[in-house]
View 1 (tube, one colour):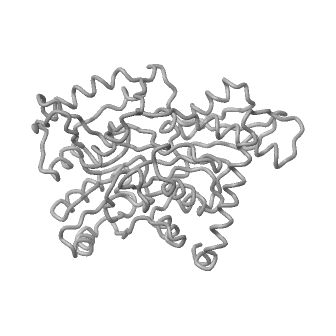
View 2: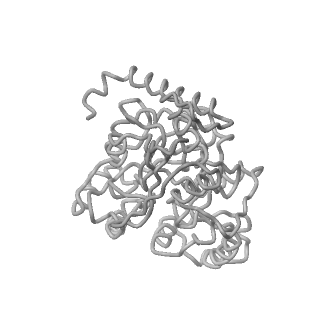
Length: 394
């Protein structure tokens, strides 16, 4: 994302309501699901993990029999094969291309192959790229919009990240536009949410550094944003340097200035629900991308688009266990309830397939079944159309 994209987003979402959340808030994925189960008196059991911190949820039917386990990184409706595929960004990229789905172009290097990577990357000296660990989560180690001059420095910063020194490094083309997360639960497109990177809006008086301070004071009023302030660190300083700016820059009134291109709220970003604003092509791309993953019906798809009407968007990656706080707590726009959708849908599908007579009754059970089986038909159609290209995938 560049400043032009930032202006486009806010100029085209002016009608969306700003949400302010209460200070006492359940935000993490597992706790959100537990909260829904408790509030609706559905049968379940919590298992506390000893070696690893955290909890898992054993879902139960009306007769209190186990029907599936929601773990910290896996849904019971998703296959191990699909999780293996999506855990490797390069394998996912290669797989999507076999279905003619537009995605990134990447190369993989060992940690110490920085010079080789630089030589192969910059045959075009004006090229911009993304550097990130092959296996990572939550934006750790992702360096965006990297030019030739700053390549080695950004490589070193990637290596310092949580996952950077544990595996291989991926270098991929920098796609123009902005990123959104599509969340799909059991075949249903729950939402498409633009993840806006950390930024400030000029007032014609204060420097970037002061504007960050003022924005953090504003975020303290919001129960979701107060714990994830904008942080001025080396990542921000480096990003500003690539735009020939520094923290002393004084933006004009109403001028938006990006502080980073990494679209993750944990670094101080914001969330905008644009589901009803984006093109059908973007929605279809999200559903088709997840449908290509064997045994998957739930996930988060990161999509790059140039506008809400983009006819040729691209997939950046697929996440097997999406952060459901993203559609639940958008900064702007409609709030969704993916925890409710997943749990009620999963229980409904189990009851239908196993022909259970003692059943939970949900108002939307027909919708749950329709969305799920329609998604399975989508999946079957895609695999039939591309069977000849898939034989060597695994």
